[in-house]
Image (cartoon, rainbow, N blue to C red; front, side, top):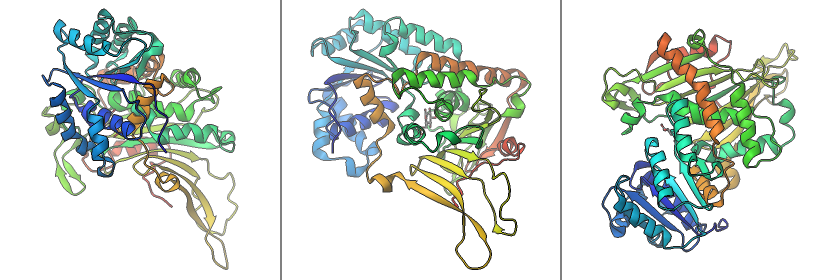
Length: 492
Ligand code: BG6
């Protein structure tokens, strides 16, 4: 069954020929079109400096879609009709001419229409674009602006961007995207926690020993070396994606899952994170950079070679021990790690429960492993509950770890939409629940900044790890020092 159609709208993409638009936004819009969710007269206006007319842009996208849409989903007739929605405006931000053309194109559909301005371009341009949209009278109460990360590279620059965009858009019109919040399993985390009654009594330091959040990538930095080298894993992944995941695990039950309540609760978690000091940065943080190695059997170069900067000290891996200073989580560490060129692509949240308080089966063979709830974000979205069971057989008792498995693809027998599909439709519907509010983004920067500062002054605790491995040994030490170990996906 198709999803309900959203209001007719204009989606105006700045950076219309860029990587994000081509790889993620247009394929996501195509999927929504194919599903019947875009109203008939919805238009997609791409802006770039490419000097293309509508036909040239449609040809370009016709050539790109097969690379980013699964073959089975690319239906010639649907694709043809989708391409007809596309228009292209050649725009140099500083030249009046392009803006006049854009304003004319936008205003063709008349007032009162939902207009989504998607800024899929460098954050340094967010303020200028917002100001120009206002100057040309292109903003009204039905307009919305979508900001792609990174929103700044520290607290001051994030504030500057927020101020500039906030000068012409109301906060309720600003959608700061963190695509992790659009992932099915991430949303399911909310449902699992708050639509089931048995978990809540267990969801605290009473029963939980610690939490692990891992976002491992096997890819390197590809063609994004220029951006990435000025950023690094802490800014690129932790400040946003990993902290957002942590918030969803740690937050108190909101009154309702609605636009402000969820974000209020996430903000409280960010404000409760124990600040990392210069003194303990070496104990609770690890930074690493990949050297040359083997990924899936193929030799790959080092990060320094990938980004063409032999002296670079940018981290491609981070591990952190984080504490949430509140009643619920006192004494429960959250171990976070993320890296590029690791041994596999795998993102997981692991809730590890405390061991049984008293060994009840003294003579039993086998081990009484701790219970774990493993939430697999990707690949193969799903959830596992690790339990200890008795292995069938006569005679004595043999304990065996087993797993209750929920495999999304199998349980629901349908394609999980890409994060951007859900999020784009939420923007059109004007639902910001899964987007970051200004105070959240700034609170996340406020927590990350001291780590950056400690690395700057005390020297980054930087370790090399060969591409294709689980990261530097120091990350293993970080958790093993506490008598715990990383969960490496070993299903019982
Ligand atoms: C982006 C980061 O936000 O997320 C990238 O900038 C990273 O460096 C990507 O590769 C990971 O997203 P996903 O959905 O592939 O896990």
